[in-house]
Amino acid sequence: MVKLLEYQGKEVLRGHGLPTPAGHVVRSVDQAIEAARAIGYPVVVKAQIYAGKRGKSGGIRTAHDEAELATVASGMLGSKICGHRVEVLLIEERVQADKEIYVGIVADPSLRMPVLLACEEGGIDIEEVAATRPEHLLKLPVDVLRGVYLHDALNLLQEAHGLSSRQKLEVARILERLYAAYRGHDCRLIEVNPLALTPDGTVALDTRVELDGDAMGRQTNIGVDRAEEAGDRSATLLEQIASTIDHDDHRGTVHFVQIDPDLSYIREHNLIPIGFDCVGAGVSLTMMDELVPLGFYPVNFCDSSGNPVGSKLYRITKVIFSQPGIEGYVFASCVSSQQLDNTARGIIKALKELYPETGGQPNIPTVLCFRGAWDEDALRLLHEHGIGEGRWVRVLGRHNTEREVALAFRALHEEWKQQSKEPNDATGA
Amino acid sequence: MTQQVLEFKVRSGGTIAIALERCAGCATQACWKVCEIQGGPLVWDAERAVPALRWSAAEIERGGCVECLGCELDCTVFGHQAVKIELPLARLEEYLGGLVEPVVYEVKRGDTRQ
Image (cartoon, rainbow over all chains, first blue to last red; front, side, top):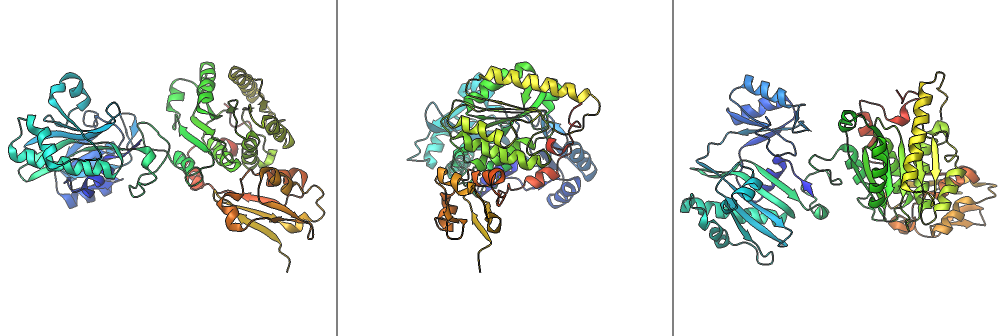
C-alpha cells in the first residue's frame, strides 16, 4: 500500500476534474507568506503528514494575516504532530461551505469489490460513523466490469435526505469522477472528507488516497517515492535507496524497512539498536523474538530471500550498516534453498569496502548464521577472507538455532561493551 | 593493440573490470573457474593466457552474469587482484552527507561505544 499526502491526493483529484481549493506546497515560512499573498487571506495552514485527526492535533490552522501565518507556519514546521515530523505545509484558501459531507470509495476485501460510500456528516471520523451509526453511511458495491454510472450514484444518494436535488446531482457527478480516479490510479482507498457544498458548487477540502502497492510499477507518473511499506509515515531516504535494489532486477529480493528510523523508540525504552538481515520473513520474526527479550532491538527489518544475487546482498549490507547508532549486526538464514555462498559473497564484499583497514572485519559485534544450501561454502568463504576470524565476529552454521544466535550475539556484545570501558583500546578489530 | 582491460556491464547496474596485464603468470586462474561453476560469462583464453567472455556484452548485461561477485573475491585471495566490481547505490552518498551522527564504519574503533 502506498499512501499519498494530502497535496498529492489533491493532484489526483484535480486530474479527474474534482475541484479543490487554491493552494501551494511550501517548506519554509517565507514560502508560506509568498503563497498566502498569491491566494489572499485568510488561509488554511495544513501539515502534510501521514496521519488522520490533524485538525484536533493542531495540524490544521487558519491564519488571518501575515503575522499570524508566520507564527503558525514556524510553529508547525519541524514540529511533531501525531508522532510525525512536519516538513511540508499546504497553504490553501479558506472555503466557506453551506454543508460538508463525506464521499469515498474503498476496496472491500470481504466483498472483493470496491464500495461507494457517502455520508451526510462531513469532516468526521468515518470509521466511527460506521461503528456507531451505520445507518448514516450509505454504501453501494460496484461491479468493476460495469463501472459506475451517474444514476448509480444518484440511487446511492436517495437516502441522503438532507441534500437538495441539485446537491445530489452535484455529488453524484463527483462520485462518478472519484470512481474514475480510483480505477485510474489503482487505489485501495480514495475519500474526500469533507466535500464542501457551496453556492458555487462542490470543493474537495481534504482527501485521503491509498494506492495498491503492487500496482506502482504502472503508476509511474504519480510522483511518490517508492519504497517498502513503511506504515503511517513516508518512506525514509534510506528506504528509498534500498528499494532501488529490486527495482529493475527481479533475481531475488531484499525487502528493507526501518523500524525505528530516528531511534526514538529504542532510546525511550532503553534498548540496544542493531542492524538486522534474515533470509526469510519467518526467521526474521523468530530471530526478533529471541533478540528483543535480551534487550536488542533491530532498527530495521530486512528479508533477503528468493535467491538474490550476490550484488543485492552487497548493496543491502551497505544500507544496513549505514544506519547510525547500531551496536551490532545479526544475519541469519532459515534452512533455505537459496545459494548461501552468493549471499556470503555479497556480505563479504560489503564488509571489505566498509572496513578496508581491517580487511572487512567490522568494529561492532557481528553474528552471521548460515543454514541451508551451500552453507558450508559460505562459512569457508568467510574464513578465506579472514572475516570469520574477526575480533567481533561469530560465525554459526546449520546446527545452530535462533536462540543460540541471539545468545552468541549477547555474549559478544557484552564482551564488546566491557572492552570499551578498558583504556588503551584503539587498536582496531 | 592488445586489450588491457576487459570490462562489461551487469544487470543490476554496475561494471566488472579485469585489468588483464595483471593476469600474466596467474597460476590459479581463479576468476573464470568460479565463474564457470556459477554458469557465468568468463572463460579462459589459452592463447593469450587471460580471461575472456563467452557471450556478447548485451547478453551479459541482460543477466548472463549472475553477479555472484566470486571473480573479484577469489582473484583477491588467490589471484593477482585484477578484478574490480563497481556496484553503485543511487543516492547513498546524499543520505550519508545528511546524517548528523556518523555511521558506525566511519567511527574509529572504541569510539562507537559509550
